[in-house]
Image (cartoon, rainbow, N blue to C red; front, side, top):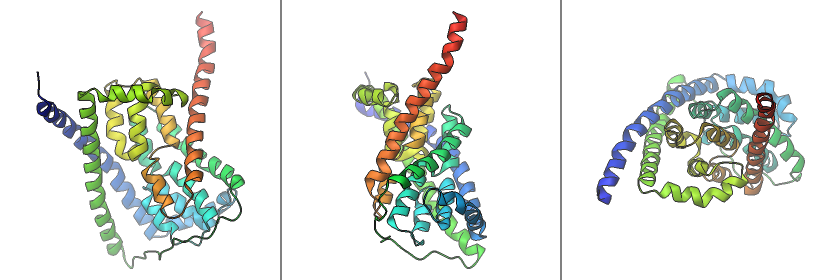
Length: 315
């Protein structure tokens, strides 16, 4: 019988190669995208696109300049759009609407690739999150009180004098990103292997089963749902990809989970980033949760309804 120390060592040996592979896969997507966006921002292309989108954002109660924040969030993690947000003269009502949109659609290109890797359609996930951002913003614009106070969080925008300066700033931020992704993905992969080795994942699945049923998800989704809420899709991708590839969750259950976490993930860290600048937590939390739950049940209903005619014909 193996000792606890040996079991931990074996779990570590299994986890690290997979973590390295997934980290490399993520970085191959993230780094080129982030540098491309930095170039677009430096040459004013994003600002130009934002100007053309101003009428669209007016429909959800936002001024034209807010478009640059949302566009940046599509390509990057939330730190970049929040930094841009601090340089704009928006009131708290506008910031709250924009925060909800960014929380749903941030890092969209990378995370759609992750969800494709776990068995869902990247096009469907991409379109779903984009449409959900504007739908939720439209509803929130209707619900929010007119006066929510001014923006108490403001900074000066960083302006690069030349391309070399911008490139050096990107290299520095990318270095931290590489370290962060490697450490977090490795840690999560090790955690998953340890929980599997000591049968703790089974206990978590049983504990979260009632909550999963309410949300329309399978009990096998419990641990993956929990990881997605704590660290999000990007950092939690290593665990999600392995679970789907090794058959620890059925493809249909993984697909339903993807519908939920497409709208509602990183409930802890990403939400706190906006709460830290004064955004009311209720308005950026409950809409995502309710929309995600409603979406899963709608998808389940559609799948059953669409499959019924086929079953009747076969009978």
